[in-house]
Image 1: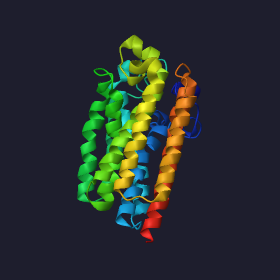
Image 2 (image 1 turned 45 degrees about the vertical axis):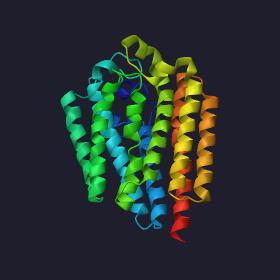
Image 3 (image 1 turned 90 degrees about the vertical axis):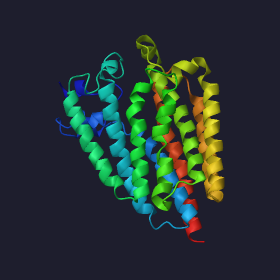
Length: 311
């Protein structure tokens, strides 16, 4: 199969296509290194939590190392999760236009090879996790249950995005577990706010496949909300801002954090205004913009942590 033909349909050309060794490309695509947006979105709650916990601790001494380890861990574990998802969804992926050229249904990688690659990624993730305290290690391992069941949820519920939110928001707990050795109420509210955010942005993402999903019986909030997606996003994005705001208040955050939350909220409003669910290309663009929304909030929390550490 030629390099061009081997590209996954929902990838638009990147370093994997142009620079990676040909034998490695299918594995990098399994791990979504050609489309890193999901890794960034998994990382955002981790970084939010790390910065907020550093502010609570009035110390940023651990923060650079924690931020770096979360970066590596998020990319590796998102890759492991996507590999698991592709193994379990290989037959469904073959029926959807956007996903039928993924490595397993396209015959570029066998199920056994994908499973071995999954183990390798999980071991790297474990090495990262073991750099933290015992409570954080246990907290991180607990998330694997949610990750394992997520691929099956779209077969049985209209709300698989809730389970994705539970998994992708777990980092909101991890920053407190790593920095403070406990999970405060602020972390739980941050977790809840992140879940609402994930439900919103993944609903946007799911609109790309809504027609194919209807044909093969896959459920999603995109299909559930349909033409009511915009008001649904108002609810979930609104919840995200309110719940994260409660977390900031409980954590004693100062004015930079609130400015960041306001910028985050404005970005979410822009997404709702810009979205057209009938345009898959636009849906993908709006979905990807959530990395920028998350970085706005993280930058503000980082400034807040630095200010509080100096007091």
